[in-house]
Length: 108
Image (spheres, rainbow, N blue to C red):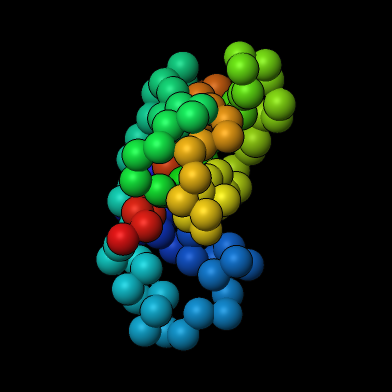
């Protein structure tokens, strides 16, 4: 998926609906769009590195805790919102179940 299409899909999500035009424009600039292959782990339980919000734009992601599957999320969905708020270590791991288009937003 192309960056422009992925960014547009992210900005259409209800969580970003109340943002001003200027804030939406800045958000669009700040988003990083990545293509993640099936089987790639992009978020590791107990990781305390810089908080990031992941938005699954396309594909499926398995969320696990202690190697147990909790949920299989389909796009679009947010992953990592809690760490953006409390800056605590990750409470779960996330692995691409299929090929995934992922938008990433860093805390700072």
